[in-house]
Length: 408
Ligand code: ARG
Image 1 (cartoon, protein in one colour):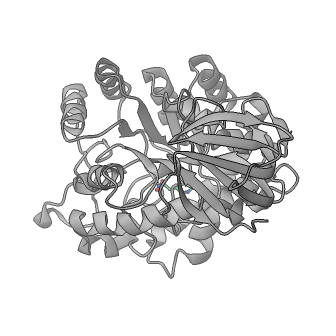
Image 2: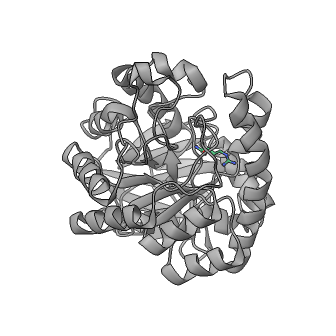
């Protein structure tokens, strides 16, 4: 990484203002330290400016659902051999890979032993490069549920770090996660694809348990994300007041109406199904999970289209770790294939995500006063969204972490 000079100028062919959809031609972005001070159109770049020929400047990308401390070589029973300390080290590598792919902000939704808290702190302290992280600690869910560890028999007494039952048990777990450094709360409202012995369609945490979690989180000023595939679990999570529903696979009209009414954001990982079905077996994913994916994936893509058509607020959430980190940008093309305009897909990964995090003053668009976090891609993503897979320039907090763009 190259340290931030006092004043930096960045120019490119165009810049997309994701707040309005406006395209600014020949932009010049002026950065002082880690803040953007101005964005000017049709400007002649001054001496010493970073010139990104042929490129489009976009805000730093934001992925609202990853597991940096996990990776695609740790599926099924393989993950039993990993300590939390070892996963933190994996996280260092995955954080760097994600930043190089253009993600300057990520939400880490579930990690063992607070490895995510350690990783966030190491990045914030400048020890290792990585995205700005908002982390949940262990995901909270019922005994035997998606967020428990169900791989072993009772003799081994294996138990997920976030297991809690009953409203007061759940409240206590929320308090514990906050005590050890979580920025937000992740709940498991239904079964899942990757967990052993759970059914994605079945509700797990009860309405009362999720209401307790949300009340406790509100008291402490943190947001709540709920993993939910099945319709009833999604509805209960929305009624309980969660801020985002992850996966949201089995949506129906009533559920979409509820999400709109409550302002619930959907974070739908519609790329990952391709990886699970093509590489999953080799990667050690359990046969029952492959089976569940065959029932969930295509239904989730239909739900995505319905939600987009209905105008539900959406963010970009990929579930990277199930597939290799750094492939996250592949999801942009799927979001467009399944119903979004390219601008909507870009908004999901920028301004909408910044709003979900309550960070719209600092993040989510290239505007004067915000933090200097931006990426450049070759060509125009509004015309060809697949250029998002070729991020060539990355700036986070005023510091350049990648510049493979042709400069002139
Ligand atoms: N972590 C999620 C689960 O195990 C992954 C779901 C992946 N499949 C999908 N179609 N989004 O439930």
